[in-house]
Image: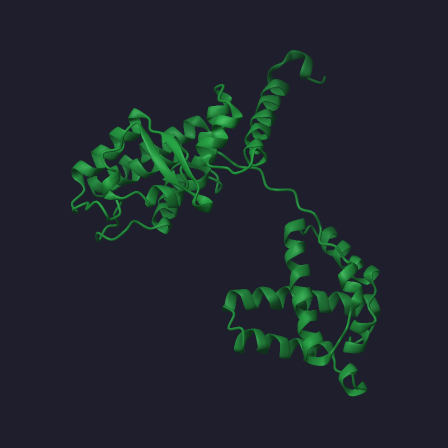
Length: 311
């Protein structure tokens, strides 16, 4: 690469990169802001780390230890491993652009591994909270049929362990619900899910008062104007309900699916059976619910057993 290119300042290269993201890749303003935040922070650190006004020549001379120093600094600031992986990905994207446009070759970056992140644990709502959420749907100032619809949807999530997309994917032909539902989930994998009487009754109550014709090939659950009920509406419902009940932000529609699995396990459910009910391809995915339940039991033990107390 020509010496003139190597002398280009990183700030100028970053401006060109941001223009590329906005003009050619047409990234959303939010995504573009994330790139700016991550890469401006990286540039600021390297400027202090190398005590220089960074040029492309400086970038080309970076060693693996320089990148690791930046990563260590980000971790010391409290950044989680997953967020640091995202920032490192942004840096890799930048350097790929620099290589294409100015032939900046930084082999050290290929020797830097992304941090390993621990998968987040499911955060199910408690049995009392699940019951309260469903009961609270009938205590709002909403049309009777909407209250019945909301209760039916939440019961499908909690009583059958459905994903929100699976519950909203039910059609008019699925009513009346039988003792089982045949659900096609992720990866087009089909599973059989038992339907509790309470779930069947809630869905029947909704259908009886729904003001719209529920044609066999049309969505079973409808929005206020008759169109398909959207996931965002259910998410907004849960936000309202958890606010009314004083529950944590983790009380989302998916938390009811988590609760389905965790509560089954707490009451003696078999892990492999729960795997089938949830439609997980791997038992290891379902195993996290056993870990959550074990942690809960240990917390109860340490708080209640007299020999667990430390004087």
